[in-house]
Amino acid sequence: MPKTRKATARELEFKDDGQEYALVMQMLGNGRCEVRCTDGVVRLAVIRGAMRKKVWIKLGEWVLVGLREYQDNKCDIIAKYSDEDVRNLKAYGEIPTVEEQKDEDDTPFDFDDI
Image (cartoon, rainbow, N blue to C red; front, side, top):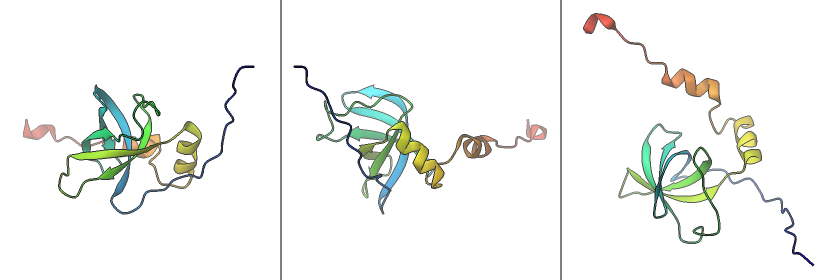
């Protein structure tokens, strides 16, 4: 008889102090990736050992990262969010929606300076 996996509902994990939500921007290999955190900083993220070869992270997915006190440009991936988790986090206002991200990216240019 083939084994079947039961879908277990897990509790939605919100960020604490020293943690941020991040979007995976680029996969670098060797358990590392580049992420853009919700605070606007692009960091080098390392997939922690307990997640390696158990949780597969792809480009464009939302993750929870732990910030390092001694290195601002590096962080550790703590958890990966499913699509349903991301919808719930957007509904709670934890993660910016597409419209909010577009507003942040719109920077006015002054062509008189050129």
